[in-house]
Amino acid sequence: MVAMMAGSAVPMLLLFAGAQASRTGRRISFAVMLFGLGYFCVWLGFSAVATIAQWALQRASLLNGSMAASRPGLGAAILIAAGVYQLTPIKNGCLTHCQSPLGFLMTHWRDGAAGAFRMGAHHGFFCLGCCWALMVVLFAVGVMNLAWVVALTVIVLIEKVTPFGVALSRATSVALIAAGIYLLM
Image 1 (tube, rainbow, N blue to C red):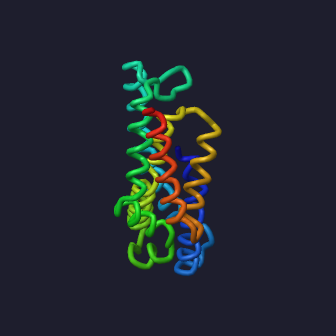
Image 2: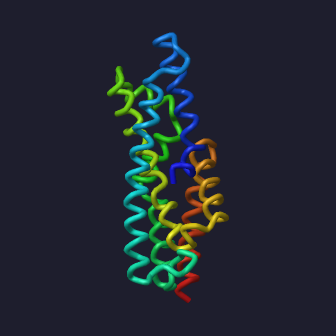
């Protein structure tokens, strides 16, 4: 999970590192590492919840051998729910914060080591709000399906770092809902 999100976190980390360097005169500071740690902790927490969910789904025989939903209704529900979430104001708000790293830093700046960690965690929560539903799609298509992991990583990256993010989010929504409906047929 953390590896999937690393690419989309790099622009924010680089911008934060640049801001820290201009403030402190040091290229890489402890604050940059703490910012990254705050971000990492949010995704580590989500990964723990996802792991518990995976364990529970496997115990209930709701995941097959490839760790995909074993029942079409479950897969459909996951895909449709993820597609609907892509259209929500929460997703849009989180995506807006993720797409504007400079705006985030200007409005959420905190000094010091604790401030850096809090900023990293705060950004991590915006990132989580933007991407969690796409990560849950892996329960429908296969948690360890590398093709889907790569596809979702690319979608997240394009959503966050290009001007086409909102349009891709809408298109992804339509595709997920359509795939969920298809599974119900």
